[in-house]
Length: 341
Image 1 (spheres, rainbow, N blue to C red):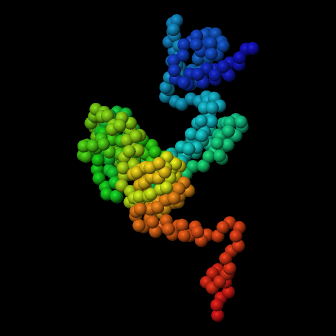
Image 2 (cartoon, one colour):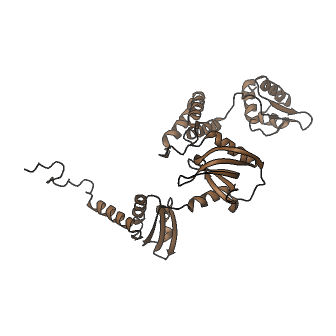
Image 3 (cartoon, rainbow, N blue to C red):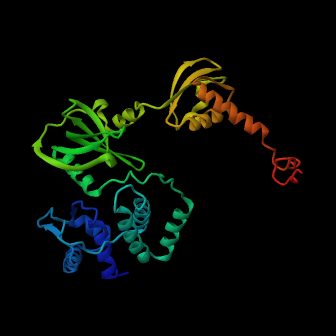
């Protein structure tokens, strides 16, 4: 059966959009047409504004070039769903202005999706929830992000103003090596020339990055991996509260309770362990102790404030009425009691 020329041209465009080099014979085989038909379809795409490079000869072929304008895109079903889902979560990125632009692009894409694909995207969106950061001061300036990305690529020194964790301000001259994302946070891994050492910088605390006009030779990031370096740097940050716990359960059984907790095993035995946990929030540490208690008995060695908080939590839980039990009788001072004369 003869193929529709328009549909055939769209299929050809879908192949060319991979930006790999295709031999004419290879395209003809994939499309089940002659090489002469391939040449005609390429001419049709050029008339529509798609810049297609070509070479002649026995081993000649075609490739979609980068043009001055953005012609209409052709996506298969999986690509269309991937773009829509990606735009949905880009709308929640911690980059200034990204939310509105992503929502506009998502609206445009969804209006063009056929019903079957719109249902797939809707099912994914309704079945997945995102945890949003309560802080609004961690938004990254997109212009700063672009400057730093270009500096990493071009190995160019950068100057910027930086607000440290304790609120003090400083000016830095660094050799930027790589950007790292961790949830909604963005970090720059760079060699700080003033400190003569590697540093990790949070981009939301960084202001007015500007090229210094000089270039540098790349260095080896400690550990060889920027993401691992950032993870190590974050793990070594000072925590306001540190607690030591004695737990009546093997350390291996605590993986679920300690998965998202900054912790260090101190001693491990066959049926017990001593673990240090850290956080900036004392009440959060008490919640962690309660989670650990679901696995085995736990006691707080230090600090005393946490031990008191855990005892208060346990006392309140013990006094809480069981589900379905009758409410305690009204009495003087209780809600619903008759006023005393």
